[in-house]
Amino acid sequence: MKKILFAASEALPFAASGGLGDVIGSLPAAIKQAEKDCDIRVIMPLYDKVGKVYRSRMTKVLETTVELGWRRQYCGLYSLVEKGVTYYFIDNEFYYRRGTLYGEGDDGERFAFFCKAVVDLLPQIDFYPDYLHAHDWQAALAVVYLKCMYADREGYRDIKTVFTIHNIQYQGIYDLYNMGDLLGLHERFAPVLEFNGCMNFMKGAIVCADMVSTVSPTYAKEILSPEYSHGLHHVLEMCKGKLTGILNGIDREYYNPAKDKELVRNFSYMRPEGKKECKKYLQEYLSLPVREDVPMIVMITRLVSHKGLDIVKDSLYSLLEENVQFVLLGTGDFAYERFFDEAARRFPGKMRTLLKYDKELSKRIYAAGDIFLMPSLSEPCGLAQMIASRYGTVPVVRETGGLYDSIRDNGWEGGGNGFTFAPYTGMELYGAVKRALNAYESKEEWEKLVLKVMRFDFSWKKSAKLYIQMYERLN
Ligand code: GLC
View 1: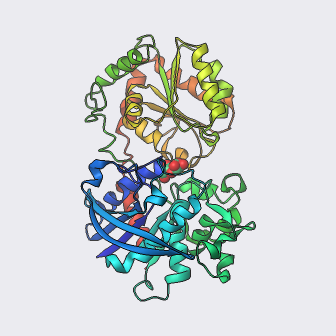
View 2: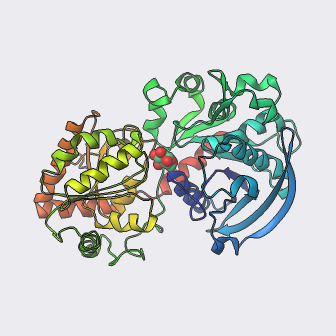
View 3: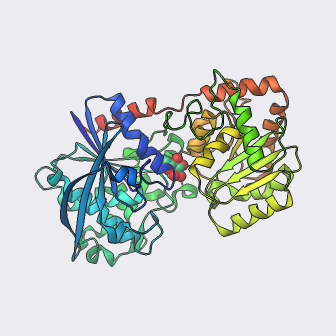
């Protein structure tokens, strides 16, 4: 039986801040489904955000002390089983009782502790995996510790490691001084972690891992170039032979308009009528004119620059000249928040800006929209375009990363499942939305497209198999 351990800083439904949480909440179960003969477990921090419902289902596995440099830190371990997968939670209130997941001054230490604990606890839980699969910079040091500090120890020797990059923009960069003082790593390992005079957790994992993957084939190519690599292209070029890209899927049960309790009316491609009710509900809820014939463009996004907000800014006022409604949900950089808030004030009959992160409301917006706008400057995979499709909202995306790998333009000869554009300009964005608006005018054409989009298979099925093949290649 294959044994796999995922190490990651978030997983739905316990605690999440973005797409990583979706993936860690659904990929393990999908792998288990595709490969019955495997024992797959996940380990993550026990944040105070993890709700009571889940805490009451947990059992305490152990209490111990983990060494981090000169520190001797308390470490509790809890576990529960969700969808046939064992989830472990590392408890240390000083590190994880912070109200938020990230953004603390000592994030480097918080996640170094997490990674050290992951590797340290294996004998105590009597689980030496065949594959340790770490995700993003917060879990990167697990791979580094394994290779630099534990590899010679009994039980650890045969563990293969995989590191997955969900977003190369966040690397975990800290002062090199911390290598000894915080991580307790001998200076001979400096070449592993050092990058541009600093310690770089992600770079360390890329160098140490037996396999490096990212979340779409196109992004795997893009990050080899300086435009996308955030400095790491030379390192990746060196490691090209072990780099691969596997497209994410979505949890089709969690995102299921036929059963979703957040919606006023459920619907599916067999019975699509309920979608109209969802649109009407949202228009009423947001005090927008209740008009079925007016196309509703929606965006659900973090308000940060790589999501393509600058070109939305450049084209928004032209778009709002059209016969449309525009709903934006998200939080992020203050300058964007102010801009979109102001736009909503200037176009009260057409635009609403909802400055919050609200998972429930987001599902009602996915269900209500006609057009889903996602013009990212870069996008490792992107899940929102897949969720939108599942809820019958036609994506308009920029051709980058996972957006390119998941959405084909409607004009494409094989027939598409959205509208796409490439050059990163407001004009191009406007052009692509305009083509979607033109298609919307022909009711019959649009309804056909909506059904097609809804039926598109963004499940984990294919990708789970690709992950299994990747593990097998390591043997
Ligand atoms: C990150 C990426 C996003 C991807 C997600 C899950 O949030 O920015 O594109 O879908 O990780 O892999």
